[in-house]
Image (cartoon, rainbow, N blue to C red; front, side):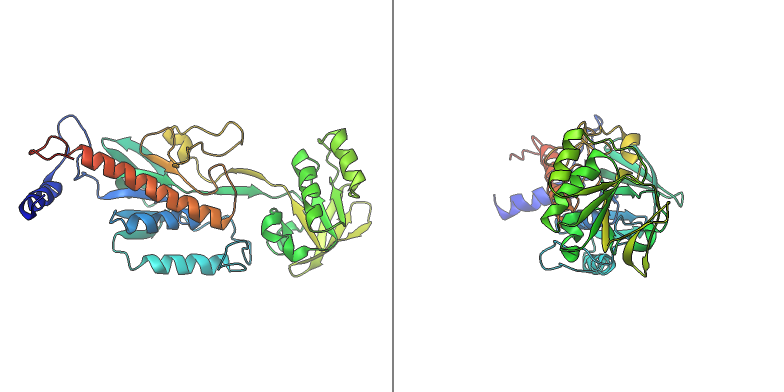
Length: 341
């Protein structure tokens, strides 16, 4: 291709618009290539990847991260033990040098499909349009209904052993709950300590007799008494107080949380849910959902619920979105003005 040919192609790229069939051409009528819903690790990572591809991106963040109660997060090479708040501040700061990326503190209340893209409605009433959507809205953990749990949650009461059990290794731990998931969690925690007591807090245990036998053989005690509250000082758990007045000394506790989608936007758009995991958005390895132009990444999808995994998924989504937009743009050029791929 000669310099003259290159110049003509560049001019064409800047001028091409959608034709009467509604096909996507290079120059979209929408101001943004992608609207990212959710400004956590997955959303910001995707914005970084897309921004570096000169894609116009706006991140809409309601400011309610799932790990807001956590003092630190672990398992992220080079960021092990970092503060979640500081991590987000640094990440947002690094995105400021990309003029292609805009971050807004805003709640997305609705999304609808329009020709060649989507319209997003914010809680302020403002409407934005883009060619694609990335849902990085995350999940909400349901805490057990036990008095005092919020005082210790994120410091000595946790839900993820991979994130927090190392700091409590060798300690006397309680596992709260009577479900199969709680029993599995108790067995998993044997990697970090042998002093584990499962407290079903008066709820009828739903795990199998075989599981109960396995726990007892492994040295895990099971207490079915009703729990009155968790007690301790500051964020340090000291033990579990039962309704009969007895007190069980414990240095930490874990629970298997119920989870639900923080946002119903995926449902609004018609995105399918996972069959094997209740509450997650179904998507392929390229993060694409069943709705063309809609992608999902982070904790709202199936997978490992760690910050480092969310960051990786966000970048994977950026690659997939950019590739899809590039393919549409190049297909719009085929046969036009003699241009051949």
